[in-house]
Structure formats: structure tokens, C-alpha cells
Image 1 (cartoon, rainbow, N blue to C red):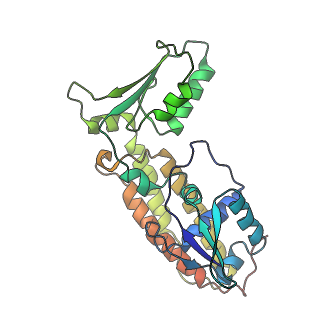
Image 2 (image 1 turned 45 degrees about the vertical axis):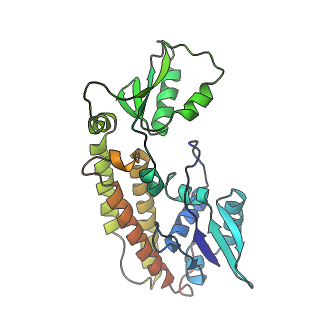
Image 3 (image 1 turned 90 degrees about the vertical axis):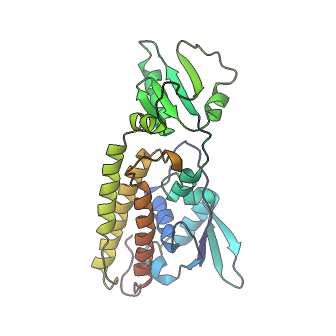
Length: 284
């Protein structure tokens, strides 16, 4: 069986839910890329399959294919070739592809959502804030949220609805009193906290077990590390607005973490391919 990775696009902002075992399996497929930024074909023979999900592997692949996270491709002869779709790749990366996000164009205009939900409607206020946070808006105040991206999706949702401008209004434009984009970014997103999350993630990366997988203890150690790495990455990237390149603040650690992640996961994959699957049976 072989695997290739396709370039990523944004997923819908609704959270895609997977069974933990399926999500872990999809994530492990990323290890087959020599570099996350330069995906290539890799061989997924018995060493990986036995260690990861030999039992039920076909069901895992069928489930992912049905949800359009994987697609089959004719590899010639009896070869089974699967390819992570752009949706599958983006999901495995934590919901967004950082390379795509950083490289997106920005027209220099800021978009603002201003709201004043009346007292007694706390549930509506909470839902609106949760929506804006999930969409990676930054907040200048609890009722003033900002993004460099188009509000086309929000406008589409509001079409046909009667909007009370005293309760909710959308703006786009440029500051007019000398405020810099860097000041806006610093005020809207907590990059100090984000930096701490990336620092923690980098420490987790540095703790990857070394050496060949020659016994069950080492195999289990690598799997525990992989779970910790995935959790730490998701915590960091879920807080990261992944702003366009020109808006990233000085000292931003996201790109360093991404490069290091690509290097370490590639090394982890090479460790997996040395695993003697005849020595150990996978956990049930």
C-alpha cells in the first residue's frame, strides 16, 4: 500500500468529529510524508500496519474513504494506493493548513463585528462570541471583534434577516488616527499566551524517544509521545489565528514550530519503518 498527500484547503468551520482511533490513524498517516510542506509517496508496508492498526486496517481505510478523507488511486498491478484528500490533510493538521493560511493574500482592510446583545439574552451573546472565537477573530473589546479576512460568509448567513443595527453591525476599512497594523494585531490576539503554547509544543517535540523500535516498551513509548505531540500541537494551533505573513508579529513561534514538526515527524516515520512487526502484536 502507498500513500500520497494533497495540498490543503480550509475545512468548514464546523468541527469534524471522528472516533479517537480513526483520528489517531489519520494523524499517523502524516508520518509517511518526508516533509509536511513537500508531500511525497511513501510505502506503508507491514512494519507500520502491524504497529499502528493492523487489526481492522481495511475498515479504517473504508471509513476514511467514505468520509472523503482518503481516495483510492490505481497503483498498477496489485498495489493499493491511497491518497489523503485536501480535506483529510487539513483535518490531520489540526483543522487548518498553516502554509496555506500564512501565504493567503490580504487586501489591507480590517473587518469588524460590533454587537450589543440586550441583557437577558446571555445565551445568544455567548453563542456569538463562541462563533467569532472559532472563526479566529481577535477581540479588541468583548463586543468588538476583528479579522483581516472577508466577512462574505457572515454576510451570506445574514442575508434576508432583519438586522437591528443597534445590536449588530459589520464594518470594514482602515484605522484613521495613526494606529498601526502591528498595534491592532497586538491588541486583538494574545500572542504572549500563544508563544507559551508553542514553547511547550517545542519541548514535547524534543522529547521524542530515540533509537530503533526493538521491543514493545519502545513502541509504546513512541505511541505515548505521539499522542502528547498531537495534543500539544492542537492546543497551540487552535489558538493561533494563522495571520497572513505580513501581519505576523515579531517573535512569532508558529513557523519555527511548523518547520521543526515537519523534521521530527519525518524522523519518527523513519523510526516506525525500522520496527520489527513480527516481534510485537498491536494493542487491541
